Image 1 (cartoon, one colour):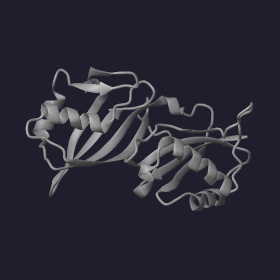
Image 2 (cartoon, one colour):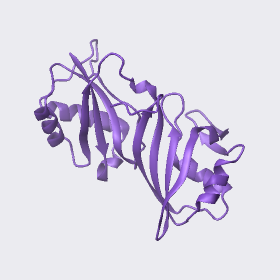
Image 3 (cartoon, rainbow, N blue to C red):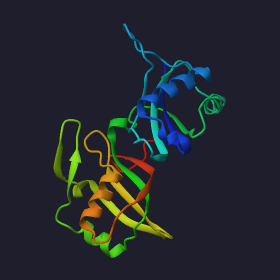
Length: 219
């Protein structure tokens, strides 16, 4: 048994694949690529495979992580075979054996997003004023209830990265992981609430980085 960490990208039509379907898809693709996953014991064995930070449906990414245990050493040919077995829009772009001292998936603390907003623009001064507020209160839904929450502590940076013909491009570094996981759409809702004239008709989200508690990539 060897433990590996995979890096992969998710783009195109694959952005509509849900988290649970993605796990099933990867399991089938490993099998088609003749890569023997290790299975748990017990009445209902399942492959030892875990995805680091579930990606919202409709969001693309170049920096996803997946841990898996396999029964043998992997070579470049195995990764080539796995990429051929995966559907369009999913691509393995990194691999490393998990060694003692390597950051765990539970050590994820931050995610960087590139957000393209259609329908409205905003300048850097207004974004800076938004970030300089004492608090940013917004309705936040949990599994059990909806409540007002201050999301400002979980917005680690928010900047204007470009202007388009019909909107603006934003860069966001947000809290992510098991302890806090702020999504870009909630930041946009807060910006609509607190920045005069900012209104979103459509937007596109791309995850560019996932970082550990030390601010470093996991692979």
